[in-house]
Length: 242
Image (cartoon, helix red, strand yellow):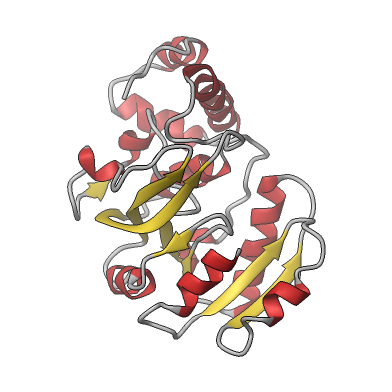
């Protein structure tokens, strides 16, 4: 937690609030008080699934009238110019996706920009087969989150951004590794985890989208994929490879 807040104290752009959604972690008051002299921190409590916790956070975002949202996790820390960079890019785009530096179980200076070009726009079909838009490396215009009800699924982040892109949100990739992302064994959406775990995440993800988001099935059809072919893809854990 200290690394998270210290990286926010070092941001070149300090004009932001911090909304901490405490998902039954116990009292954080003592830890938060250490940083309140420098940072504008607001804490709210949430219980239940990850989807419910995120939904509570979204409701608070609208209640406070925020226009832009930079997502982050207590496990992560951020480069000093992350807030400034994404705020600048949000002038022209609805969603910003920045690269990450991995640390923990595996370390890499960069990760996504080995395959994705800087400032390239991210289209819907790109995230049907892989998940690289998470709550550690994205920022959004708050208006994009209106009327979104999150499914109680494993990869809530993947579900959210699939729906946003399906609704026409414009996303762009920033190749600078603005997030230091912690890798650990319990991370279900791990970028470099074992294939069986990734297959499970994908299976549940596609089932959720087929149940809740018929507009995504139409998008797949426009790419020349038939609905019955999707069923085969969903049930075959080895259909993709990065």
